[in-house]
Image (cartoon, rainbow over all chains, first blue to last red; front, side):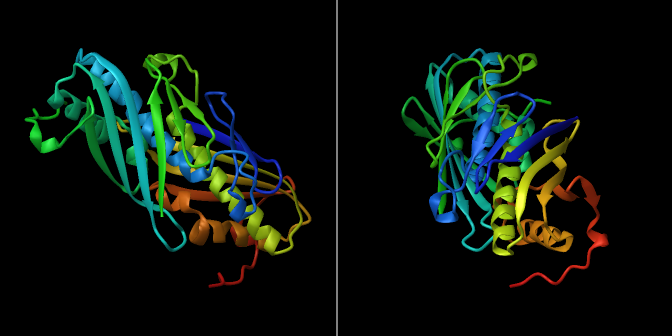
Length: 151
Length: 151
């Protein structure tokens, strides 16, 4: 099951990319690297792919669990090496969920995404550390009793 | 040196993401996963980040080497696991370069990006396999004599 993406150079540090969805993404470096900021930084696309992937999982899993989600926002903070290549070493994912959700089910959805479904987190070699903020309040994973993961 | 990205859920499988560049990216699942295709697939963003990162490197390195690049297109084909999570196992990167470039310098730029500069390839745990097509003709790395990488 291959996936193909193509990027065309537009001059300087500017690129135009397309993939199977047909949606174009422009990429560029910042001014300090000779770019003009006319697009996304490549490294932010990695974090966006990660939050999109786990976000889609969470929306599907909570739906299947009949947990009524009203709002969701996911924040990713990627820590990078100081030396080149400046790859991500650790990524903190904070899931801000709102709705009449059981905390244990919310954590279960997060764990199912991270351990079983999310292709993007499994493609990255950084440590991924999840956090849950449910209806404005941080909930630690140890505060809830979780059942084992289903097959 | 942290990088922060945020994605907001727009309902169903649809997300709106923003990062330090300020450029918005929409993400969505395909119809088979309950989405409506109103955005990029998260996994294609990973490949786009990779080609953008190495493409920016190549444009900078060839500039510094005074190699006149007239066109560049980079294609990424990501092979994925059949089982979940369907992470990338192998990514073939084909650099289509045009211009009056020395083949050895073109390969050197590719190797410098992959081994020293490109933060995105160092963040992915797939094997990345480069190919060079120079002025329409495939050039194998063994066809050129390459000097050692500089410090």
